[in-house]
Length: 218
Image (tube, rainbow, N blue to C red; front, side):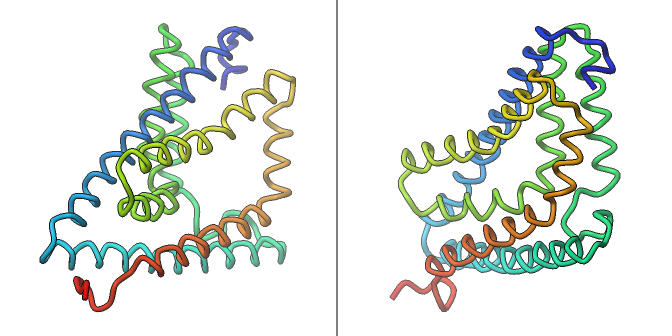
């Protein structure tokens, strides 16, 4: 998009910093809000403990389902099926809205502000996909201390935006979008295997944090 919009190298760096900061801050704010809600439910006691346990059971079930779907997607890709047949992917309508938001951002008169706003919009739209990993992570953090959780939340989101910085670095180095797309296509199946393993690990962590029956702490 930056190439199509005929932006300079300096402007690409501005986009890199603005977009990455926007995504980091937006996801950090979303995570902090959800953490406070879940932690508050955990601390209330009574029926709130019952509700908290149901949240953990739901997160565990999501990890199991999404882990199985990730491995299914990997199997399809290894079998030579098309990426369009994957179960875990952003709907076409959301992809279109994300592309539109980015196109407006890189063509804005105030480039940094336009791209920052685009980053906020894209973050919320992509939460339908990235939330599959983010929500169980936040739920796991909700039972440890606030400042420790805050540091881990910041670390998680730094790692989340690290691929953006790597991609921008590769673009500045001269790697084309076609080369990046080809690399992703050739390694998508293994990415799905890795994602399935991540869900398995998160599910195991949640399993050891769950109580039965719901709300019981005897």
